[in-house]
Length: 119
Length: 108
Image (cartoon, rainbow over all chains, first blue to last red; front, side):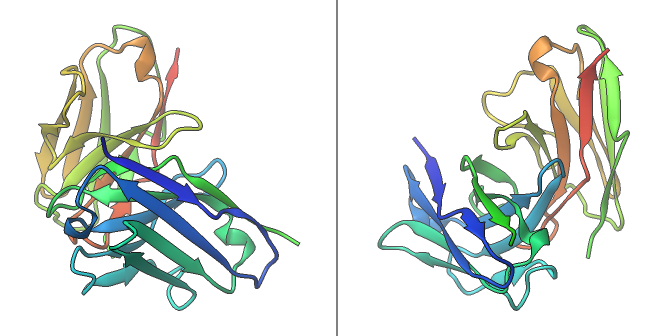
């Protein structure tokens, strides 16, 4: 059974940093592109970042470019999102999601982890 | 960047109704269009991929159509568990997707 479990969320002050993790199981982690999607309270879904199966291709939304870094550890079957220079508008539930094999649709999602940026 | 626009933003319907939600892309995306259902406090769930393919386990009352810039999600006979928010997503660029703003389907 495919499972994605996020962790690392919490309360952080503006300008601070946080590292989110997503532990994957039930599939060959290295074979799939992985993604982060966020959802601010009461708002819609916003794509944040993606990393290809080969780790060669990495993309970011303009809203986080230069501040966030996506990475993965194949040995640990884990996806990460390093978030720096956090702003109030980064407050959201952050989901990791697996893209279907060689596709762009997200067939499995984690339960999400809440990040709150506030002084 | 490809912008996705859904309509309506909210919709009131009753059990048994036929419901249609539309999604328009700012440029042609062929059939690279997916639909998700999200219930409060839960992660989104994939319903339809590649515009018209039903994800495994999703009831057949859900269907999708369209290509190019205009797409629709149809629920043929609304069930109580279908009241939720629905999002379209373009995956024309596999690693740089974007979502519509969502359509909240409420019980009339």
